[in-house]
Amino acid sequence: MKKKIMITAALLAVMLASAQDSLRDLYPKNKKGNEILPRKGDIGLGFNCLPIIDVLFGTINFATPYPGSSNMVQYTANSNNQIVGKYYLKDKAAIRVRFGINTLSGSMTNQVQDAKAMYTASFGTQDDRNAASLLRVDDIATFAKNNWLLSVGYEKRRGYRRLQGYYGAEFGIGRTGSVQSFKYGNAFSDLYPVQYTDNFNALTVAVQTPTSAGRVTRELEAKNGGGMRYGIRGFIGIEYFIFAKISIAAEYGWGYAITRSRAATSTREVYNNGQNGPAVFKEEVDIDAREGQRGFSVDNNNGTVFSMNNTLGGNTSLSGGAGALTILFHF
Image (cartoon, rainbow, N blue to C red; front, top):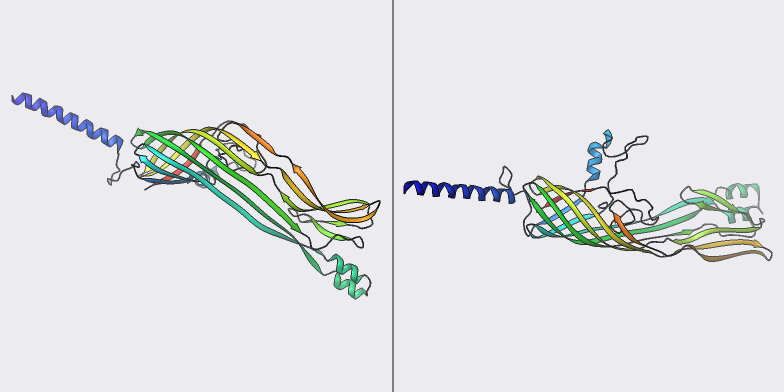
């Protein structure tokens, strides 16, 4: 009888130890007794950790190629400029959101000679002309850009202890756009030469001469061809918890996206010295047509709906996939 009791107790001890091991695998704790993995009801926040890798390893050519180097290591732009948020519906399932809102606006000013003052001074003395040559007027360029992206998805997980695998799908929508306008200090004239800024990027100056035949144009406003993006994406990844509820995730995805870009237009001021004499007028021209694109893409193709890059210029590269690296904090 005692022997049966001892055997039964031993079996119960083995079963209890096995159950405890299983619980430790499912809900591991660190040496301080803190749980390592997120649980139901937890929130996770994360961001792209490649800048951290660049700081740590870029100087020794591990992550970031430097001028003249042959290192062509590429990482996907999938998580660039985005914040990742998660809410755990279950211990092994979460709703996740990735979003990025980026805007940029500003102005540039370039001074050119005051053409009207120089013309008026040409009827006066040398002192008048010398004084007028010092006068300047402002050419001003203003610009505004915007780029936003929102994706919502569902994520499932499996794994034990610190190493977790995950997979799921998400829907994304995004928009891009930009506009720039120009105001010139000198109006076009059929009486005297006029200086104006021809290129604000290089601050180069051109001259409109009233005696020259033909057309001279300068831009007043340009609306670039931004547009809307929609897409669905499947993803799979591996997440390792380096500390309690702090992890680094490597993720790879494949999605289908539809992009619609509007036509780009430009408003210009024209000085035309034609057969009927000089004339100044405005004209609107289409500098690009409407475009539509759709297709499947791996994450590092920057033209997809899930990328924040190449907002206005499009993308022609299909160079294969690369994983996104994200650092996440759970609480």
